[in-house]
Length: 308
Image 1 (cartoon, rainbow, N blue to C red):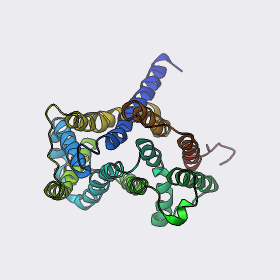
Image 2: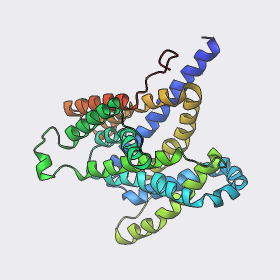
Image 3: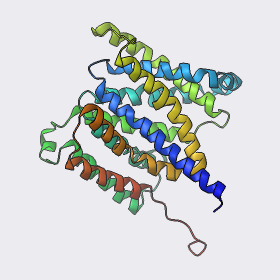
Image 4: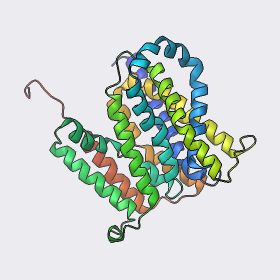
């Protein structure tokens, strides 16, 4: 391997780790800002910031692809609702009743939901390793949400936040499936900006309703709320997107995805440092089950000439 290739691989891994670290902060903010800003408002201002930051770099591309955007508007509407309007809003709702560690652990289960949903939508075969991965992930989630006490399942009294986060993971799985079918005529920047804008538009009536029905008054200047929203818009949205794209370009989507599964580690450390959340043995057991389950589920054996 040449020195140039080694450099590209190192840069790729560093970009993947940086993007994952920035994304892990999203769960810490979701948990830490519960007393400062309501969930829909946090999502609305996060995407407003992201749109304003992305606009100078993507507006020209959006105008150039305007015809393709109009032709694929139904697809973009559904994708925007799932990936922008719903996904992070559900995370912020979940943050009110569960820990940042739980949020991040449940978040990395979305590949398993992709497997299950693809089975029903596209009749894709679920192989033995996928079944095993699903069983391990379900076991990990069950251990997490019941806090190791399975009798809770009979009473259905486990955390509402964990259920909201499960719904968010399913939403992101649907969004990821739709991404596979992104129209060829849509460039990456125009697609990103158009979905950000549409998602923000769909959030607007809910933001208006939340503002009218709560006593919350947003104070951005000289307030941690301002810096949290700026972090979400700049680091968890714009920078993460750029870094992740560079990582996939340098080391490929599979290696990048494996780095993404370290998300609970970063999120747990940030929550421990910033929020004082404890990392318990239960979290470590659940993390191991989910992490191994996801790796087994997405494992695809290499096809050799003799196998063919």
